[in-house]
Length: 193
Ligand SMILES: *[C@@H]1O[C@H](CO)[C@@H](O)[C@H](O)[C@H]1NC(C)=O
Image (cartoon, rainbow, N blue to C red; front, side, top):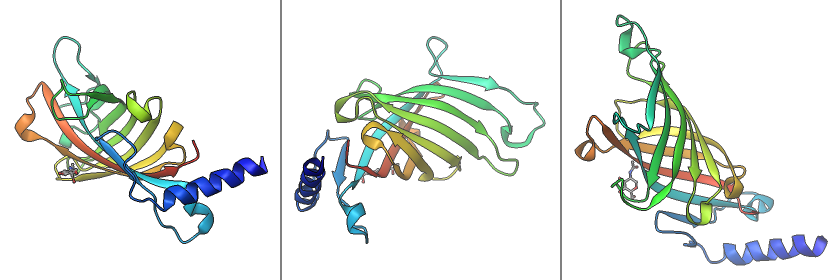
């Protein structure tokens, strides 16, 4: 056991000396990060993931379903709530390489502007992250550009994840039935999987 830990520690030092590393598919890249504590340095890494997410509101096989409606006189659609199981792809086209599914719930939760709460799990299903997930939980200032939301945890290769997501609607590619959102996710997580 001691030998194994010692090996892992030496291995992590070896990896640390080769930054930045590009270990994964083109939709993401990783680098080791410098933290003040030596112990943390040896087990944390930083990963950047870039993908596109598709809200499909088509009559047949929608991936977003409204589950709560609210009275018309409520400002900013307050209370309107949706469940999604949206495809995530490597490129902006729905036909590009699948990356996983974005599954969760979001709703309009602001009385004074267009703002949503988001509770979305990004379930990765392809490549090195297959079987791992990231959880996003936070406020989405819908009308803004570069909407920032926290990443609060993860599973698999993303154990101990913490970080943030930046999202933008791609207006030029979107239609009322198919909304395309570009995501850049930056997370720090355990490197011991
Ligand atoms: C994501 O990062 C890419 C590359 O830096 C950039 O071109 C794109 O505008 C970013 N998109 C978002 C939503 O942050």
